[in-house]
Length: 141
Image (cartoon, rainbow, N blue to C red; front, side, top):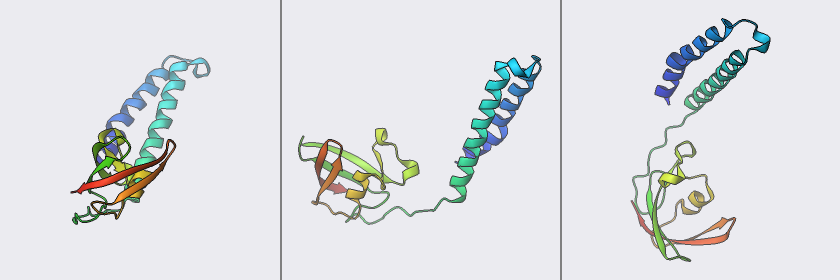
């Protein structure tokens, strides 16, 4: 995040400033769509910078769970869907690191909450829009 913030504040901010400068050179700002677009981009950039600064300032370092007898942040959990008899492995992460497409599940999600502090062999129920889903914990790493 710090690297992204540095990039946005140095490289990207200069690019947007250059776009605004070029757009101003086209003349009348009241009917200048390039200027409007550049100013909109600048607003988005400053918003993103503020968001990242806030995340960095309020970040909490969480130690990954080193125990493998129960699920915690940092655990890789293999579960079996009891309805479809299929297996999947998920990593439990904080909300900012969640990427469900990469099997990284937030501890704040309904599925993540259901898995937290559970043990191998436990059956967990997740209240999903499709109904109650049941999973058996097969392994914790």
